[in-house]
Length: 223
Image 1 (cartoon, rainbow, N blue to C red):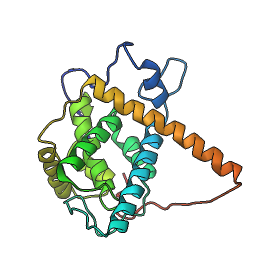
Image 2 (image 1 turned 60 degrees about the vertical axis):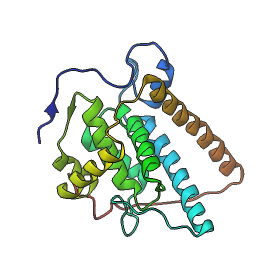
Image 3 (image 1 turned 135 degrees about the horizontal axis):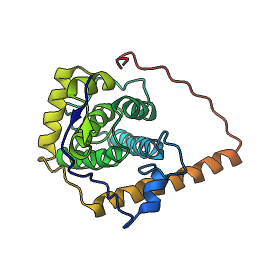
Image 4 (image 1 turned 90 degrees about the horizontal axis):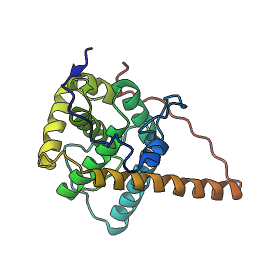
């Protein structure tokens, strides 16, 4: 599978050491010369933030007995593959820049706001693969085609094409995000890391231990 190369038009994430340089390093959006590139921290922070948001939304819908707005992104049941594992898979096989996941989060919130739907376990996976793909096309110099992303995301090419179109129209094709917006979402993710540390310390203090194993969702195609 060949990458689609575009002329160098720059990236959305600000490269110069103007502002937030330490923040970008902390999230794994930039790698210092002394560090080896690996899994960027932004993936685990984003998954934690999304999981907490989903838990709050689903609790709200259940307590108020409200029905969520159904979109093309909703599945009949939640996939068995967890959000962090799904993000790891997308990052591993798509080879997109870590900044794509911050931009994808921006896009997801814009789309959710435009549809009045809630982010839940039924729609998060399709929203993630679509938003990351769109972000990669917009900010990266090279990216894979829809057929490849469909294999990575565990959907058909035909379905992903429909998801992409619905997503773009939901955003009203507003794909640009300012440096300030990008920075504020980075700050939000950075704060999520602080919250995670506090929760982990509380669990350790209570001597709570848990084990969890996850098998790949059979709906996710192997690359």
